[in-house]
Image 1 (cartoon, rainbow, N blue to C red):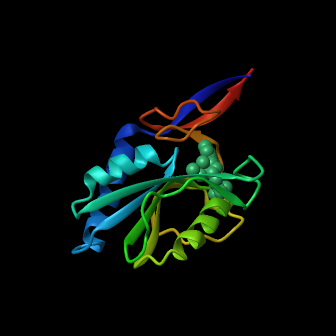
Image 2: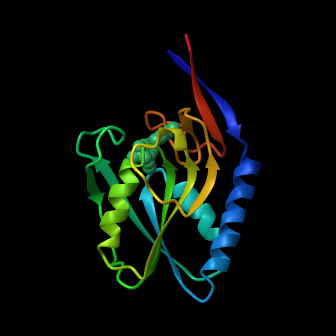
Image 3: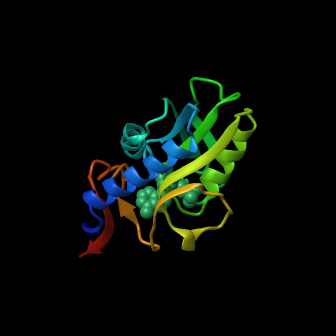
Length: 175
Ligand code: IMP
Ligand code: MG
């Protein structure tokens, strides 16, 4: 089966939305340093674009997770493939993700990070599929709420492809 990518959010729309979130973060973290935690690989494009638009001091760290079952979307047990380089103690931590789907990955991850004693811990996601939620997660900053379609681009992949698309596309199959 060959797939076709239908544009869901254009590059201009995504850029404008990231600017909007960046402005909010700059205001709400005034006087603080925001420590961005990027969840690899999907969150990386969004995090870079967001960081460029934040005007308060920013520090960065990265982590990579996968589920024990191999499929991040069916298991709630998250394995840390690459942990953060630095402690979170007393930092104002903002986790940056590409998408919240079932919520399993993020609910597990946020709990784990909370136990490291940050001064504050918030979550920012470019995309949210609320219809798919199985586990409750508190999202502090959302780019776009989208319907239950499989999306790619801006860091999101289908079989490791399409992460580099500068827009958000829905994957459609044709035969
Ligand atoms: P969760 O179901 O909320 O735990 O989401 C787990 C992960 O599944 C996300 O961080 C993404 O990496 C991936 N994912 C969920 N929905 C999509 C999608 O539409 N396109 C690409 N990856 C997705
Ligand atoms: Mg992800």
